[in-house]
Amino acid sequence: MVTFLSGGTGTPKLLDGAAAAFSPEETTVVANTGDDIELGGLFISPDIDTLLFQGGGILDRETWWGIKSDTHRTNSALMDIAEAADLPTGPQYLPEEDQTGSRELANWRRFSGVAEFMTIGDRDRAVHITRTSLLDEGYTLSEVTERLAGAFGLTIDLLPMSDDPIASLVHTDEGLMHFQEYWVAREGEPSVDTVEFRGSSKAEPAPGVLEALEDTVVIGPSNPVTSIGPMLALPGVADALAQTTVVAVSPFLGDDAFSGPAGDLMKAVNADPSTDGLATAYPFADAFVIDESDDADFDRPTVETDIRIDTRGDAARVVRAVEDAIGRVI
Ligand code: FO1
Image 1 (cartoon, protein in one colour):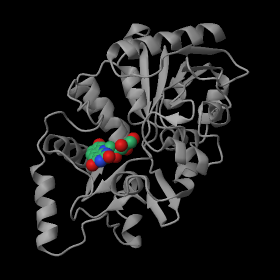
Image 2 (image 1 turned 60 degrees about the vertical axis):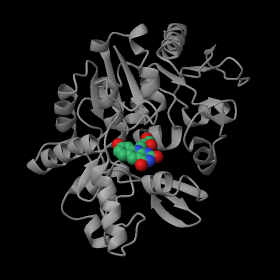
Image 3 (image 1 turned 90 degrees about the horizontal axis):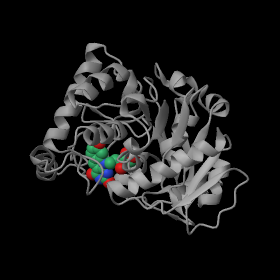
């Protein structure tokens, strides 16, 4: 049995090759939900969706979010209406008093749908409408995720990290903003002071998460700060990881992150934005998989391979390196 901790792009890419070493029936994936937002009344869970669409064979593999060949008629119409009505076209938070009201799960991450700052495809939107409606019917995010995983034919077990509201908020030189505003609307431009996982200390891991962490854990090549950080901030998770075998795959080629804002965010939390910084970010890791060109030096077993993942064959190669790393610990 193996459990992967996953964020938006790096770990789903690795999971393309998971079957090279681990049977899907014995694989659990815990997904970050700190990136989730409510936009125009729809609850969007980007990291869960990437895993649903990947498992269902419909993921847009150019972007690693959204559905391939999706249309965007509603999203375009929202922009047209906002422009015609002379409304703002950037992210608009709902007023403070509405952030913590009604749908509890949306706390601190509730945006107006005017001009819809994230590009939501039409088929993608059907998933968000279904999720939001089931949440409103009283189902938990875990229950909704299980239902959607069944609909997309997933063979792995997919768990959200929590059924409670946790919002990844970025404190920047231009003020406090949600991760999606920082990353999607502002393209990671503002300079980051600190990152906050609002709600995490009062949140609980979702049902099944702590049990899944009793198995061998693989931390995929996701952003250590905003993809894996929210999970580590949940009560009990870091302790559980300290008790089990953990292998971490580096999301860095030396000092460069493969994708996303990992480098800037690592600096903001005072960790070295490189493979070396992984030891600080993951003190409980028992082994690492790093790039063969990397000269990082760890005091724990380290397997080197070409960790760039462009194809399923690449993913299988890195997964076999993970298997090798697990073998060196156990
Ligand atoms: N990322 C973007 O960079 N631009 C988008 O317009 C965008 C839309 C979007 C819609 C639905 C969804 O589930 C994800 C979407 N993403 C988009 C990806 C997402 O914002 C982040 O890359 C992930 O949260 C990172 O883990």
